[in-house]
Length: 360
Image 1 (tube, rainbow, N blue to C red):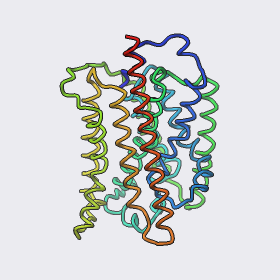
Image 2 (image 1 turned 90 degrees about the horizontal axis):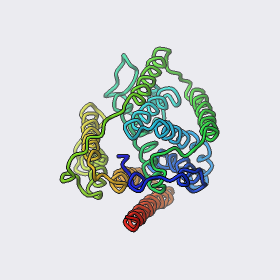
Image 3 (image 1 turned 90 degrees about the vertical axis):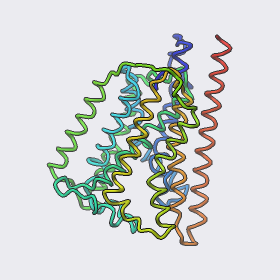
């Protein structure tokens, strides 16, 4: 997935320089895009745009800081998407287990629709719900880290696979991440009057450490195969959209047909989520090994993920007439924002391709 336009035309020394548009701009873009796709796009909260803007200054270091640290760690060591995905998985476990405690806290953000959610797949020995853990952790992997990285890298094709920050910049971002994470952990523990047990925290730390070690031990050899089986970018995006949407589609269809949908928060629902994510991961890995995998395919994959998040948000619009129109406008604005962002990224790729063709 890291064979990009920059590898085709090569990077000159001037291209490797730390200019604003090549370094600071994409860093800022990722810093602010990650919290939007992680928290606001799905529409869980009923905050106004003003409240979201204020909250962004806490969420940007928390999610954007983590995304930048993960990307820089992978690119500085010459690694690509397997490392980014594994580090994102480590972040998801760390965030849900040790920062906001959502893996273990039974009262974490309880709502009417989630009230019974932790119970059916609850594992007493671990103190977690398998389904909740899967949703929270994979949510961080896909929407908090991987998708925003993929999209922002599209806008800087010449620096897609190289670091953006020097040591000082990375140190500043790291401090900005540590501070809000500590605040979030502290206030969550006070508000919910809950802390994971020592055994739970130790187990979480071991899992996170193992994932990080695995991330930096992965150096997979590229084995490109013939391009005849590589679908068009729009097919890749559609596959991502449909597979990520499938659990919600099944649940919604059952409710519309009057069929009980409780199985979707039980072990059958857990297995459906596992199978859809597993199939998407297998297809992506298979396709990305093609010599013709391009930036357009990566963008389509990320775009399918963001559009999934955007449409599902409309299912969360409240039926309360006083809030309905405000929430509907909010979801619509975010959906249009995603569409515009993807169109701009696609235009950038097209312009880069024309430039490469002109230089060939």
